[in-house]
Image (cartoon, rainbow, N blue to C red; front, side, top):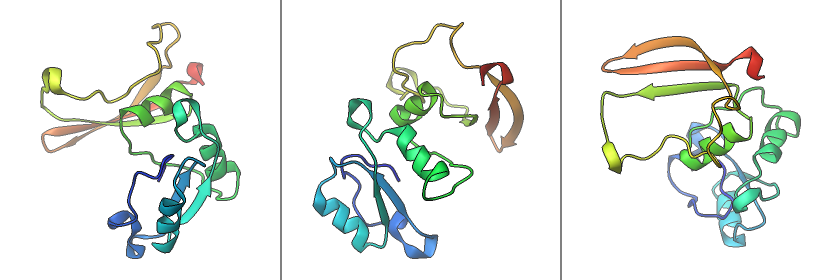
Length: 150
């Protein structure tokens, strides 16, 4: 879990030990009470520098997960538009899994990705469609970073 400022409480299924261990990556901006509560709930808490805008520095977090102390080979990120936009904008995503439902939300819909400034089409990363799977009325689209974009 990424939480730069200690906003997520230490209760709920994320902190249920039956679901597996929880790792919280935070910054020095997280209140000591939140860090203590996460630890008391059984989570391992790691601190990395803050990135632009005060969030978790994603390069540092991914280094901690993959190249650093944790040894992960893959990381699945399920997040909001800001986190997903920062991962894409920072060049941290090699694969996208997009779920599309047959719904039109209009002006009240939330964006899937908030990128820091609109890229030009020529500068935008290119992804190649690697798979399509129907899921009832929905569709799962799997994209991988195109070799020329890597």
